[in-house]
Image (cartoon, rainbow, N blue to C red; front, side):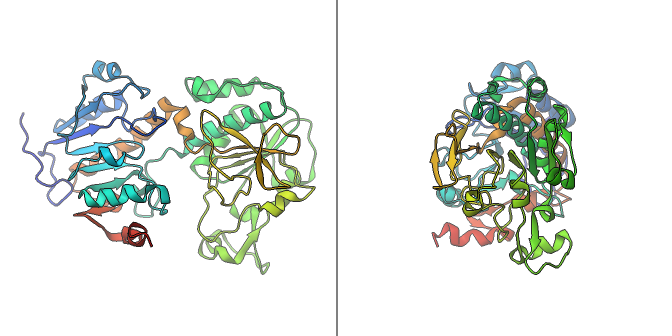
Length: 419
């Protein structure tokens, strides 16, 4: 059956009789990302459910799912997908590869005014591109609907223990990217003979939940805050803490968590009580503007600061975790931080805190991450193409239109202007 073309996608009167063509982009950032928005099986499922949909895949030799994997599911693979209505990728599309007057979905990493992507957003506006940022795909309560956070938690937890083994010359786990999936990572962790270390985990969102799943999977015992702070153990243990566990109001008044998010400037860190007894720190928190640092450079200088391994999954450089002085890479994931000097050193140095701060951890689990992301994208985003965006998912995600920043994203204009 032949369907009429959509005259202007995502505008009024979207009905299931319209025909839409989606292009899955080759990832062009270096190093190349092996993830993809939609797996071969998910593409096939969508085509079955939406006969008015066509999906074309741009040929790539770097993604986890091969061109042949797509062809086996009946999905066409092409060298050029520029004829598609919508182009979808994971990471930023290089400026030179942006096609004018198109609609794009990808992580632009611009909503926090990241300096390194200012020219990307300028080019998107100059080329009259409609940008729908994956990070902005949220429900009416601004809860994210599609994300890789839990997979960052999986890999970050694995890398934390890999770092610990290397730092203290106890064992040598293979890199996460060498393992097929999360299950293999857990099996490796379960076989470790760990000393009676204490692990503190901040955050209870997607990332924190991913870390907890790994710690529970490797059968590490979870203890209460009081137990963690006051007791010694003959086995490795962990505690998971939330914002009011490691922050307190400056005036000493106890209030609920909403007060912290409304008035972060009224709080100071209370993390040192954990740092004095923990051996390893894994971050899974969200860090908001105005919130206090979790631990400072001065905190790390104290003789009773006990943490020797920091796995900073959140990876906010020069942010809440003082030892994260730069991001690291999958190829070279660990560096040392000397708390006395505040400088980078070899992580094997006796006084060094070993820091794992890879900023693209889900890339080490490309299969699991792609399949999980695609499940949610198919559930929350694809239907919006055909139901007149009745829940406002596309409207909230759209950053640019007609060469301008729109709606909630107009605050980025000074960033674009270089101010």
